[in-house]
Length: 234
Image 1: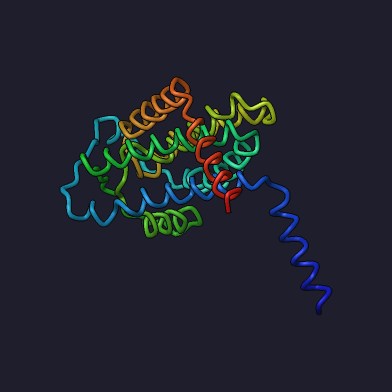
Image 2: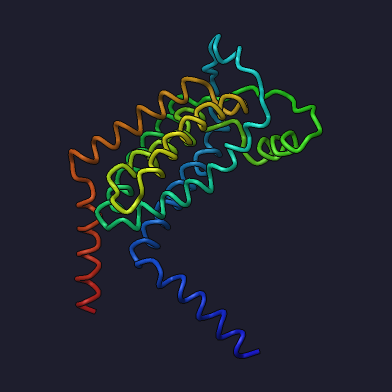
């Protein structure tokens, strides 16, 4: 029994040793800020009047439940891609954190300044995809729509891989294709409007350019330097 427990402990330690400490720290930061914005704004949104951005094009797009597979698979894709970007080096990791912070601040302002909601169709089918759609609608309320965070994260995953030498070209192309599929899927599962896509792309690209011009990764290096100085004094 002791040998089994020791083996499990060694495996967990090996997992932590596989990634540098800064990867775990930056990943935790990204997860916290994402969940804080997504779930933290919802109590306030219930107090604000919601609007619709539906256009004639949105009305023409039918519900297609098989597209829910792309919607759900996106979470696994993001996890793999973000960890891969963070592992590139500290510069890429800190820049991603800085850019994502800008995006989340702008998104929060958009969510609260002009709340958007969507009228969802009734799921009447009994197939597997229909069950997944019912699950999606149950766990994800029709709020925080513009900009689409699905588009935001998929776009930043693609753009940030372009400068990574450790990420192969084929995976960069995969992220581009997956981004396009995500843009279609959020429309076909009736989670977003067309406008949510373009606002998401614009906000993300703008944040990336601001981060590049201001060399926003310097904030991460400054925080790390201060933390090291305090630890050395202690």
